Length: 570
Image 1: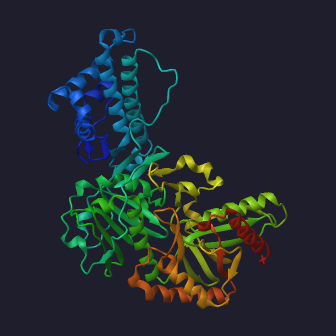
Image 2: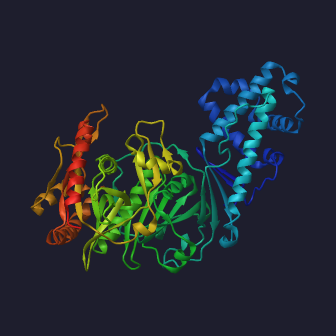
Image 3: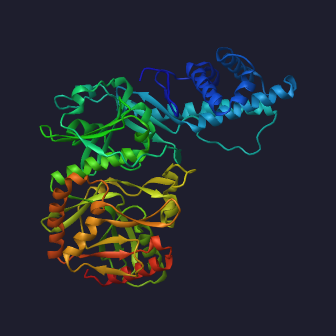
């Protein structure tokens, strides 16, 4: 990135390598400040034309913006003993105060990032955060000083927020070995370090669910007009695979959200291994297509997503990555599963590994919290001492020498705000909150470590979270055909637009498996679950009653599960 500042509709990227302000005066006089004021007034003209005309007072933007910069400079240079409320008439003072407050509110509503270019990431790693700290301090000082001078009084209650940025990125060029035909990506800088100012509030437009992936016969990079100066790369560890996520800088906010879900790969990891997954987001074109391509020569799964309205929401980024991940798992004979895996430690030093399969809203998190509550109520040698999450998004089942084992793919989880359980609040300050003002707000939270995710965990029990049948307890599938039918249909209840439960189906109980891969998926599922049935693993379904509005039934089902876990052989 060569510009001092990059502005799109709702994203601001400040290049601290090109624009390093040492004082508030320099901040006001820099190109980025006037560039943002232009964006502010253009958006104000659309948002409230009457206020825009009142503020500009018949002047053009070319005339208005320099006068505002001059006003800010006067507020900064006037000493603390100068009372500007006496020098300015009340109307002018109120107008200036309105400009300061509304402009600052507009600035804070943007997704704001700072970037710093570092050729030697090891030398910059310890200091890049200091650049961002200084920038945030300058923006805060500018706002606070202007407000104090215009009101003529000090604030008795000072609420200090992250005035400058939501996150800061250290960018570095990696000399990675890319396969033949991937030369367009060679000069794209990598995000080497990230500083998140959590909790972060993000607002994304709703995404269409009808954007079906297209299977490509030709590698899209063969004919793609991609300017590497407009793109960044976020290297991620998705389970055991390296995923290079290339994206247009307009989508930096969505990429930043991903680091609360997946582990960031280090420079040495990127240089020492070949990527199994490559994702391209925000490509030229507005047709909204998502294309998948299997590069068999280089053993790479690739996704290409054009930049448009449908690509804006964070979940589209997540879904594309997890779809690629699932395809790669199946090509290696492993079974992708959507659910939550946990290790349950009892007070007699025994432990059990439980896998709950189901979509978001099926009652997995609520069941885990109910187990914790029950253990606190009744203290015995077989009470639960602690529960450690292995994964709570998507993982995989595979056959090892000792039987079926599970691994995770993500270190974090995307949770509905209304479904948060009490135990997770200890980490709530790490969260990235998405669409808090809309109907279905969510939060992205890291819940476990990568070492836990990327290790083999034997499976003692597998349960499908059934949230729609009004039954209590759990049921064992003694016949594998019943289990197969349950997973193939993936039935669960969701809330309709009227707020009533509506029964839907998700094939394979996993939205990241394309319908075209049905036969491959079923063959692996038969093999993996066949081995679990041979080994006597408990496979069944748990009735959570979550869509029935009867929380007491969920608690009773959790008690039945708790009793069964304590009875299983150690």
